[in-house]
Image (tube, rainbow, N blue to C red; front, side):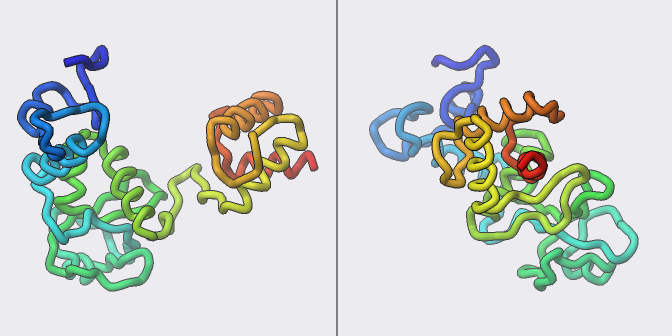
Amino acid sequence: MIGSWAGAMGHTQWMPEVWLHMGVDFDRDGRVMPFGHPDDSLAGTARYLLERGKYRRGEAWGCEVKVAGREAGGWHTYEQWQSLGVHRADGKPFARPGDRVKLWVPVRGGPAFLVGQNFRSVYSYNPSTSYALAVCHLGDLIAGGPPFHQQFPGGERVPTLEEIKEIQRRLNERGFTTDGVDGRTGSDTIKAVLAFEKKVGMQPADGYAGLKVLARLRQGA
């Protein structure tokens, strides 16, 4: 087995022990393969979430909420949370009011969430609450869900396709080549943004094609 300096290996960056005990020969070629075609890796990931993470089919990981009453601790059903003044941020009813969840506010002034067993399942894969939230939220976005209604402190909303195109166009006009104006933030756009940020003294200079960069580009129009 060939892995990184820390031992993690393959598409899903597992330790050898996990491959040996959770790996799945999904393509039935006679071996569990961490590399190459992703079939075995994805099937093994599903098995891990089910068996070690205790993932519950049909149950949501949780959702963003608004807290109208006082914050409470412990595990309660969605229905019980609603009676305590906690409602979905999008105003929709809870799909499975009998599922048990707990309230989690990662950062004061930021969004609040009710998280359940499937959030813990993802957390078991990589014990970081930020990681688990990012993965769960990304899944919602892929399924057509909206961005968070409440931004994290210091954060900003995701730019639209047209706004990214404007960023690329303005960067090219200033001599920072993005290899096209297509609304896709590939490596060339990231490099161009980073070079622009460094030139004008923006901090942090992170290469993110966001609204702060767009506002600065517009200032110099």
